[in-house]
Image (cartoon, rainbow, N blue to C red; front, top):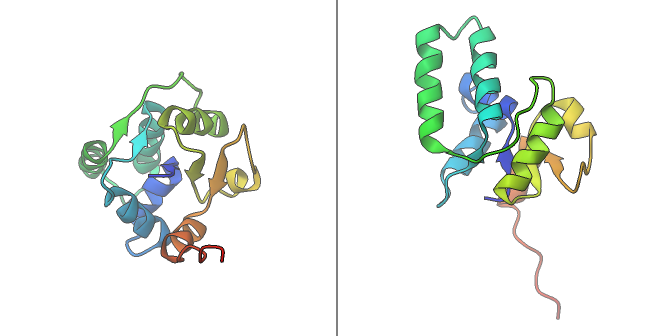
Length: 137
């Protein structure tokens, strides 16, 4: 797994079947290793799902149980709710990756934060199906 997933990807995948975030999550969960996440990400996902009227409390609990069963939580520092960039950079570093999958426009505009790149689900999915360049001759 070459990326970690931002909270918006989990939430968008939870509400929009067939969307790029949902396809990206399925691809990420389909690999040999479990995607890594942090407590901060799980707290944001749960909070965001609770804020959606289409998700009742029971549905949020079921969704969070499902997500937690599919990921490995790595330890990072505690961050405030609004510290998205810092928390996701810390997660990427703790997970040993240099990319964060997100569709959040503010994060996508913030290129190369502390050697961590924010990548959209559309771009990442395109990379996954694009064959590598031919070897040099």
